View 1 (tube, rainbow, N blue to C red):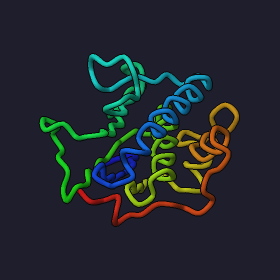
View 2: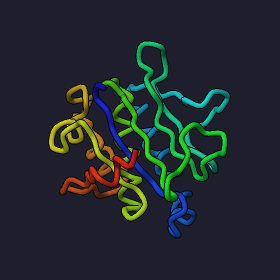
View 3: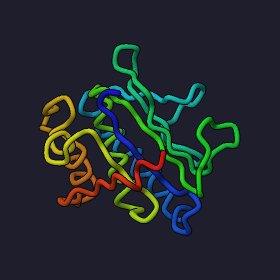
View 4: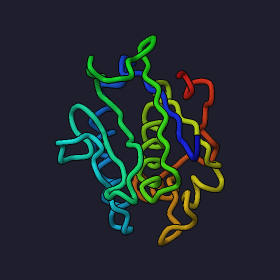
Length: 171
C-alpha cells in the first residue's frame, strides 16, 4: 500500500468538544511552520480556503506533483461522508508516499494524540526514531521531523513512541 499513517478518533468523547479549538489553533501554527520551511500545503476539501476551522481539518500537498491523499479530521462527521463512525470512532489511512507534506500530516496527528490521548490514536509505517524524528524524506531544512516541529512550537513532544496499532487500525 505504500508509506501510510493510520489514525482513529472519537468525536463523541466528552473532551473532544472542549479541546477542538486548541487542535484547530495548533494545526494553524503547524501549517505556518511547515510552510515557512518551504513546504507547500493545500486544502484537500474542494472549495475551502482554510486548512482548519470550526468543522474540520483538511490538508495535503499543494500541487499535482506534491499532492497526495489528504488528512481529514472532522469535528462532526457529515452524514454524507464516505467513512462513517463505528462505535463512535472514525478510522482513516493516509498514504503520503513520503511527499513533503508528510511533515504537516505527522505533526498534526502527533499533536492531536498529545491533546486527546483517550480519543485519538495513531500508528505509522514510519519509524518513531527515524521518520518521525527526521522527516519521511530525510532531514528537511533544519532537520525537521514531526517530533521537532511539535517540540519547537509547543514546548514538548513525547520521547516514548505513542503508536497504538490496535486502536489506530479500527478499520
